[in-house]
Amino acid sequence: MANDLFNSFMTGPDEQGRFGDFGGRFVSETLMPLILSLEEEYEKAKTDESFWAEMNDLWTHYVGRPSPLYFAERLTDHLGGAKVYMKRDELNHTGAHKINNVLGQIILARRMGKTRIIAETGAGQHGVATATVCAKFGLKCVVYMGAHDVERQAPNVFRMRLLGAEVVPVTSGRGTLKDAMNDALRDWVTNVRDTFYCIGTVAGPHPYPAMVRDFQAIIGKEVREQMDAAEGRLPDTLVAAIGGGSNAMGLFFPFLDDTDVNIIGVEAGGKGVNAKMEHCASLTGGRPGVLHGNRTYLLQDDDGQILEGFSISAGLDYPGIGPEHAWLHEIGRAKYVSITDVEALEAFQLCCTLEGIIPALEPSHALAHVMKLAPTLPADHIICMNMCGRGDKDIFTVAKALGFEMGNFG
Image (spheres, rainbow, N blue to C red):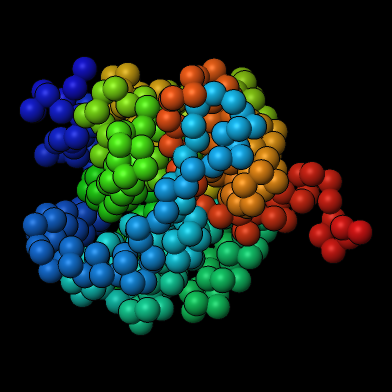
């Protein structure tokens, strides 16, 4: 069922920051004034023509938008069945969708007089985007990154440091995205005066989930126009990978009221969705709880303790999901599936050899589901998947998984 207001799926969140039973604002008293100030600033910016003029100028001349919509002809022929299009957001400046959102948040930070920007990162793409925009505007940048991710995403760590950012390895927990977000929140609590927390996904306390979604919705808005130009109609199915879920919400949101368009989010299945929780499929294998300031689906034990997930993909290695995705899952507007590491690696290699595109491991999960889905559909069915990141950052991880030693490929 749809939101009662205007019978639309696109009207959330409500005044309490809730998407149905999900979302909200679960933060300390210290942070509440900052959250309310950010919400007030964003509400003003949403109707400020000068704000969007600056955003559009930077999206065009700095990021390189619109990103292309690409018909993957050889992949389509190989799979048989549906036509496969890729939204090429990996061609953005910095190599992923993350910069779409970072620009908006840092423009807001500057309007609020903040001079120090902190961020969390998993795959490193949000960290690189944040460091990039901070360098452009001359702002101090501190990026929290799990120690495990620092090791497996070394190219992005070096990029962040080249851009002038301080990268703080987080050793608590398993040293992944969840732990990085924990430390970033602790930093924010103790540095409220000059610091702005730039969250990289559609999670966290309200207004972050809606704000990040709104900035990323440029993806789906472009797809609507580009698909009309290419095919004269909307796609039949949208597919995107999901960790926290910002690239997916960016693609999905402008299509939520087009109920003939199927929407599929692809979670990280790791070694398989099993009782050992060797995965990060929180919708497939989790249940509702509270983490990082919002109520959503989480991987947790019977006592409500958050469990450590697992994925070969650093950007999907998060034991929760954005609250709007949790809501879309519960009301049935979107379908969520999981893909294993092995399946994602197969898709990674196929994309390289058939299309000459080296994808990040995150969208490789989405592509793996497309590989399952396309052969079951007729030739006039159109699938659009979000190629949300490029794979330069993942070559060491992939080489190790495939049994190669870097520097010994002879």
